[in-house]
Length: 425
Image (cartoon, rainbow, N blue to C red; front, top):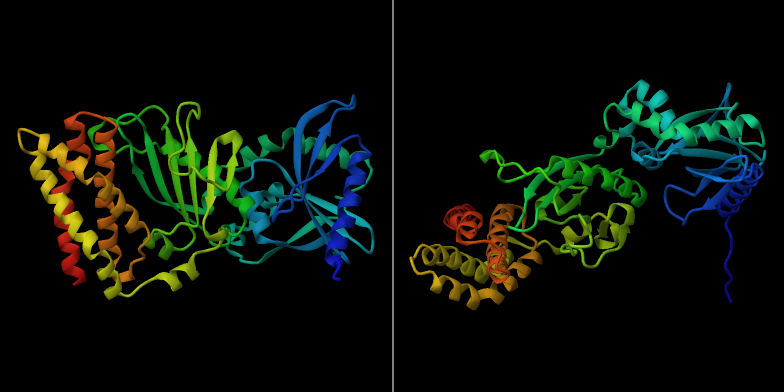
């Protein structure tokens, strides 16, 4: 019968935890293990001399090695780039501890300060690395039961957040993402903004890093507060009710509408129910952000390769949907323009289930590269048809509202569809 075994790396890691925890507890502070993840192993909670918590936290990442590497007055360590990326966007001080098993000694460095004072001072090129970055830890920064060590950590816990804010003249998180598209999807009663965002591939491999980045992207989109009324000088002043983020680490994924992560932020969770993510994998409670990782949090390149279809198969699969959309876009505009609109509403009610059925069917179709524009226009048209039916069903807005938001777009969408069909055929 097979029994579980510890490999040598696990033993080293365990020894590093025991060593650091013993030093921290000796000063009357707490050391807590974090759930096993990619970037953070534990955290230190700082207490006063009277034994009361200061509510100050320092994140700790432990790296154990059999033998420490020395160079002049420093410890040399090849630090994983994804850990540095995480620290680069994290708003809580993070301390890296490198533990030498043979010597039973450990050395520390405040990672964000090192990024700003050492790495960034030589240029931002280090962020282009895909594996590791070599760092130097002064041998004076030893983890041991000493007043100097404890005072240094206490100062970081007290002033670290403020110092990081001063260093970050440019928000460092913006090195790692680009907003590709913003849309105002508001109804009459709710402000809903969505954004499609490209994430640097090296950054997207860590959930811890992504959690920190998601908070910052969400805040940026909220601050942008894009409104489709911008050209009429009727900008929205209040916060949106919802922000939806679709995250991509490959532009082919973006063009195909296949995000590796979806995010929903809800303003005032007491009155606003989730729409995009009724089911989710993770929630950031203090920000009311829900996260859904797609395809087991793996890039979707394999999905694209396995599920993309030929041009012939694609056109066959959308033939009936396309015919339905073209017919509805044309007929609804005509019906709406009649003085008596009862036939318009009767038609919407009769076709209600078909709008949703075709909209959902399009969500499962992956077009070949040549047909991506046709697919995009068709999908947007079906979205508007379904949203129109929802607005009428829920009595959202008057006829002027329905016309300005949906109906008046239909003739243009029909013309663009015809144009894209001619291009593809």
